[in-house]
Length: 143
Length: 128
Image (cartoon, rainbow over the protein chains, first blue to last red):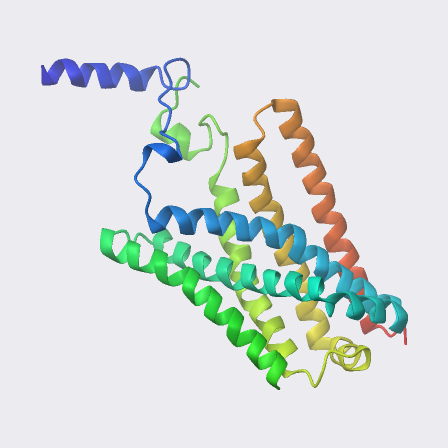
């Protein structure tokens, strides 16, 4: 019976990529855990940075290169309530993406896959992201 | 090519044709981003204030200008690689996927070129 199952697996491997290709189960199949949350957060924060982060960054550099008037417009926009929300959001996305990215570096060398350690760092990295964001703004506003 | 032998997959002959190169570049640029964006974060905190004069004075000196240009290359490259993965995962129709990746490449190169030009203009004193 085992041999028959093995034969079946070999057969399905041989046809992988053509038909009966095995599909990986999607999100709703798995029991939720912090590792899934931190993975999704990494992608959301990263793509948010690519769009909003680089967008505001280009506006900043463009305004600097265009002169004091353009910079005054940028400075006005960024110190409105919405401006602050955008800036805090970008800095939070950066520190969060940085922490989950550092977690990826550890996983890349094959470490940190044990269930408990993996769970602990999945919880700690987004918390560190929030703490670093708070520290950054505290330093910026209290200097 | 068949269904992909292990050596074929190593040589990039699997169904995706490549991947290792993309994966490594994502890591190389991530390390660049880690160093350079942290440099930017520290620099912003250390600046007297974020007024036009203070920022120009800082950014037009050689080392900050070069670091900023490196930061632009590293972040736009990393963003291009990361957003490519998002497009590949969520845009299923081949023509749309191709169009999205074309647009992404144009935007990434345009953004980086614009940023580098702004820094060079400041550093060479064209706006002073």
